[in-house]
Length: 297
Image: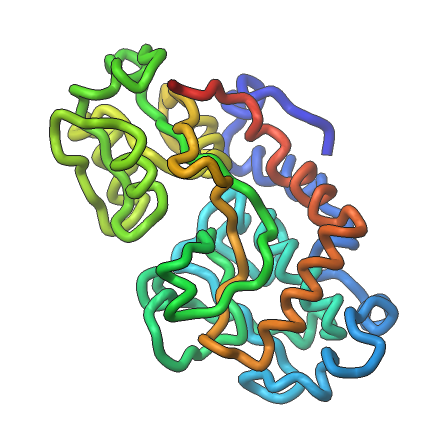
């Protein structure tokens, strides 16, 4: 998809923006992949990672999960079945590498906090911006990373946070993030706030608080920040990216049950997508605008 300016995207109504995104899709990264294509691109020539040999929740079917609701640009239109949006496209690409056709994929929904808790899962893998952390790896498995992400502060024009040029200028403001997320962890580690951060059950709740002036700024991952400020929040602005707390990039991985029999094959699929440039192509298609945000220090 051609690179579009944020100003141009912000000028479009939501339906028009979705059409722009949809028009940028192609058959390689969406649910439209053919069965023949899938059969030609499996990740394991020894038949260890095929629909016939994989111990999926339902034999012969791949059951991925995502949040309810799911957000753009990760999933377009809260409809993962359309394969549009970065995580929707990655999921179908992984399914294809494992030998599943689009008709073999049956989505389900999972609460973010429920997914990262230990215990049996009612999905084969989940995709919902799950950051790979050592703490979570004690309870669940992750595939290799499909995306390195930065956390970002957003605000509304006219609020002091919108004009902040440094972490110090945000220190005495009211900032918030969704509970249980690395966005909240990044907020707490990057800024020595004078006040406790506000914590919300969902990003929808946090976005409403920002709209209503209950908080000055909200921390979300960069692609979500771009979409919220361009489409969902009137006069929304990206203030800047937060620095990495530990010097290592935050990474998203597909989440699986602890010691899942699928983890190795799913990781092979993600690795193959990275190595042949498919992940980069999907990032360019769905997330190309996310680089336009200054880093705060």
